[in-house]
Length: 185
Image (tube, rainbow, N blue to C red; front, side):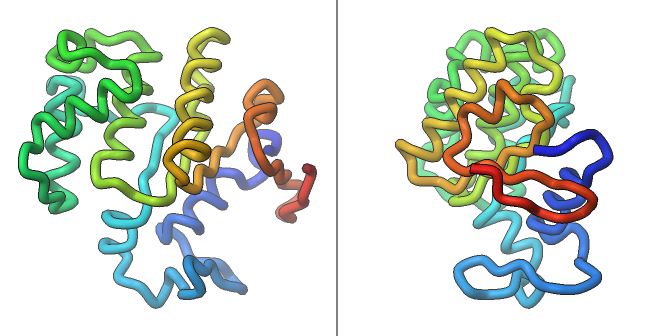
């Protein structure tokens, strides 16, 4: 949690290895991410959900997932079926999966973004304001999906937000205040 400008996105950049801290370290399973191959770390361990979706708008939802799997070198017997299964898990049926993402609602696009983050089965999911552009009902649906990923799939899900409504889904709540990370609950 934190106000705009508190450093939430910077924290995510540090956790994802896109930026380097001026001091300290980021450890995953006891190993510094700065000593890891960054591409391997981001393509095997970490899935990122963006506030602005960052989807290829001229491609279908399914094509977005398949491209992500291809880029990350995912090896599945039936990649198309795997991608459809992930999309179904987040509430996108096959009809919507075959629509261009530009033709999907904001909530559907965010679900595709979540599916893309899951497409190579990472254990850590980082979400940057995943409900910032969504209505209250869709926010509840998206947060329920993220909560299920943590509780049912045993993934580490880190969500940054300024929304108090989003905070009610957190098992642990941390705040950023003047660059300091503070435990809230």
